Length: 228
Length: 262
Ligand SMILES: Nc1ncnc2c1ncn2[C@@H]1O[C@H](COP(=O)(O)OP(=O)(O)OP(=O)(O)O)[C@@H](O)[C@H]1O
Ligand SMILES: [Mg+2]
Image (cartoon, rainbow over the protein chains, first blue to last red):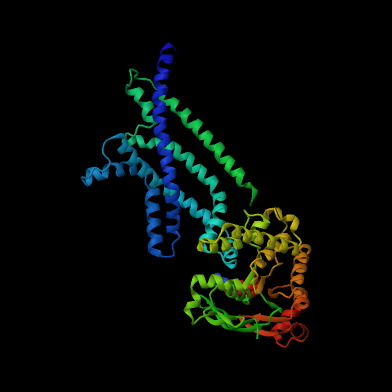
């Protein structure tokens, strides 16, 4: 017990640092993948067969392979195969590579949710806008976007909760996120080794953070309940 | 001269001819009822007038000006179409209100966007006059809500209204942009008989205020009462046309006789 109390502040400190990296990767992924996903969803809906086909193949590849492999390929491929190590070996380089992999991967999942959201809006909404002389852009932003957001909040929140947990995959390229930080105390770090409880303890961080997100999404859903 | 002239309109969907050489004209202030069995092409005809479908050939002329001519590519530009389609208002069978806007918002959205756009283009326009224009739009919307008897509902959302009320909002919304001709595609067929009455009352009210209207309907009694002219469509052609009296009391075509008796 005494030993635990001694270890506790050291471990928490370290986990906090790791979790900050987790949150950073989470935030960067969201900021990048939401707009990119919207663009990809437009791409898959293009009337030009080559364009829509191209995007559908990309989505198929990205969703059909493990994110872990994508991380490894994005991180190692330029250096090992092309002999152009663009990422460097620093934590910043690993973070950049992780961000690219996560943004790309999640944009593809988001795009399918967006596509479902757009397609679920009855064509009558477009037509009502057209006969009132509105432009396509006006109809999208002023009429369809909010209806689409309302429909995608539930599947989106699912995906985003998964993203929080998925960030831990980035430790495969040694990104120092929270699980990496917890694991370090098993191998030995800052005078502590063979301790498994820090690793278990990381679950609490995820749990609390996802709890906050769940409340937040619940609020958004409530806010959009005023229309059907 | 007629307000609306439709000449030689043809429309096919994948080699199925849905409209075969449609010709008719409509005078200002007249109400035209289009009747006919399911699949005869009534909706497609209305959608061609509103540019929701593009006819394969033909000419549509409003007030002496061509607004559609399959041989005139300058009329097919998106911005030109957007202007020209405002000659027509459209009331849909399924109302198609914008759910996230209040009743008032539904009426004013398009008008305000158009007003803001024209002010954005003309950068020197001062803000006070823009505000006056937007206030005018609100005022006009309130007048139209009064006309359809829904002033009290101006802040309600569509999901809080009955079907009949929603359709009356849709009618007011279509009137906001002062179309020359207001089109209705079976405006009451999604409604209970009781709610149908209130919508038909509004349309009757519009007739007495001299609006020009085209009404696709299965309500024969209503068509007979309110229409100045009637077109009976069958298999993509105008099988018979005439005054309400001629079509309903003295039908000539056997298909029409059959239709009226069923
Ligand atoms: N977008 C489309 N693609 C293919 N065929 C279509 C399309 N729209 C209409 N049609 C066909 O055109 C024909 C006429 O349809 P339309 O909707 O104009 O008939 P209608 O007279 O309005 O019928 P109803 O009384 O049932 O509303 C039908 O055979 C229909 O299947
Ligand atoms: Mg129809």
